[in-house]
Length: 149
Image (cartoon, rainbow, N blue to C red):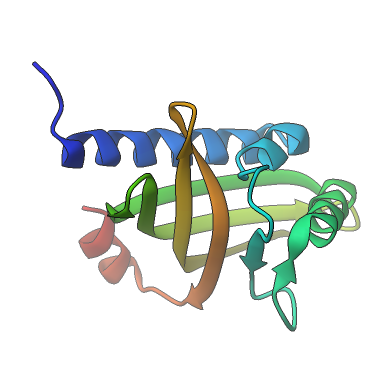
């Protein structure tokens, strides 16, 4: 049976974030860089660890380089709440991200959660991200269970 456009988008975005999470777990920063749309002129990452947006390829590569040199363990679990195509070949997704990182300087594991809004573009049959924005969230176990089912 042929997938509907909505089913295709849903499957593609879940596969995208499963790969994204697996690359983090493997600390494979080369593959993480490749989930970004290399043809986009202005990729943007907005995370709580910075005072402002990380904009452009130079800044994005420096960000990934910093992460590679500072992290020795990473576990991410992305729960896609919804995704839909907002323009031809452009998908927006809302994701609940649970993360844990351990830095090279300490054995302490840092954990948290964030809502993520991501914009992705279909390129040659696969999705590539060009905008990523996180907002930290503090969830009780009950709230997390309600959200992730």
